[in-house]
Image (cartoon, rainbow, N blue to C red; front, side):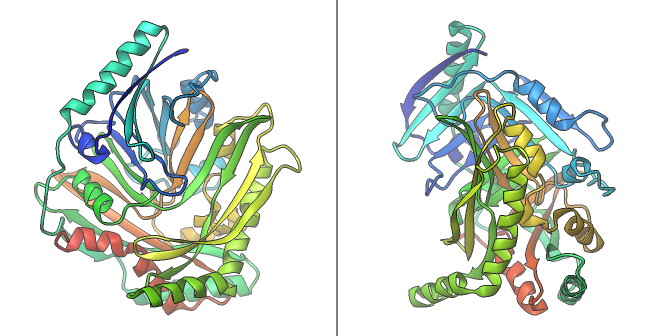
Length: 451
């Protein structure tokens, strides 16, 4: 795959292009909102190789991914960040394997799903253009694959315009009081010194209406509440629809080697109904001692995770407690960076840091044990969707605001979860309300008519 060809084309809407192939197994759309650090969207299909690592598989999942990706190759300076390579879906329970925890695996979901894509469409939101990229063993093969990707643009079609609700059912699996009791018990565990913080989630489940497919949910979310890490991946009998605002890990080449970055989210308040109220809530979040403490715990955890594979002394925190605003909520976001050790790559970093600390708590392993007391197996929720480029570049999301779907008896069953970081001064009713705010975009998309 040493040769790489790039063909530039006029801008097309990536959701419309993806709609033509949405029901194909392994069709994938990584859709950014075009905002800060979210310039590129990607579409890929027809992978040249796939692999699943199911629970109990004795293979090392990180080694399998590294073998599929192959040796590092040079990048095209005029190309997008992702220039072909792996797409991967890591279920939350992969973390139990990596940390040797006896967690029950999620039904119907591998610990890790991988697919290698030698051709990609990259959508440049900043310059309103599309790049068709192909990789091959020689220039002719690379050019052929780039032209094949270019042909996907000709098959684009508008997403189906469903005006009504997308789900025939949508309901919480437990009453709110059960969640509030769980929060109170976790606060007691914190007071007893068992942990400092744990992320505990609520769950809603349901079935898509007849004739509705997972891509219809993805398209509606993309239209109503775009996020930096919006994603759709269709797998055999399964699909993942994500509207995540959170980056997990990013790796790119620096002048002295590979540089790593993580941007954990901790701290949430809802958006205001008016500009004045919205500004007041954003200021309140920025000043909140509770939310800052919650965020700082995870920053310290992520510093430790990056330090496991970074050059000593290179891990730093250039940004703390930055307020970022999304369709339904304000978040506190911090940034941690580090320089990877020369013998390490992005997948080594992924193995060292997974699962993301922002959705476990601190200390991580004990927090995972506490989470298991109150939640069923998470599967893709709170796992990660990532791309790993053949040149060593890497980017990944934390799969919050995410609905895993399974096709059962001809119907698509979905699960929506939303969590909150529980700390010593957490109030059960406030944490319950926070989970409702986070899940609101899915509830609206699934149960209300299109706006």
